[in-house]
Length: 201
Ligand SMILES: [Zn+2]
Image (cartoon, rainbow, N blue to C red; front, side, top):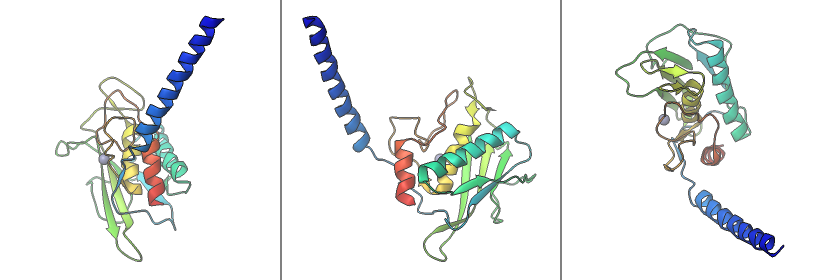
């Protein structure tokens, strides 16, 4: 009986320490940064995917858009039922295309180019293009030597929403963590991403 009580006290103490450590790491580390360009909340930004993406990949794009919407509590973005067959990322043509191109000149698995306009008030996003760089190997799941398309796209969609890379470098599961990793999932906005999106909108 005494032993159980002592064990209980030790566990209690450890829990309190754990809570203190967690609080310090969460509250002292809000580290998101923003691009200074935000979406116009009067309309929904609709991505048009390249026709060569599979329906599963496009579903994952949709999940990515929805997760930012949930984090913001607003319908900011969606994925169109249309498909495009264009090449030539990036293109300032007022279209919101998701390209799939093999680009050895771009040393990134994904990239976003945003075109902004300062009118009517503030720096609002006019259009943006996303590249999924098939120079690298992708999968629709966690696989060795491959990048999860969902995890790459949700990061690029974060840039479109107005977030830049987080300065918090101790947690690679943060969507706006600067680097992508193979064989790794980071599909949903985390505390720092959620703080960031709510600071913008
Ligand atoms: Zn990035």
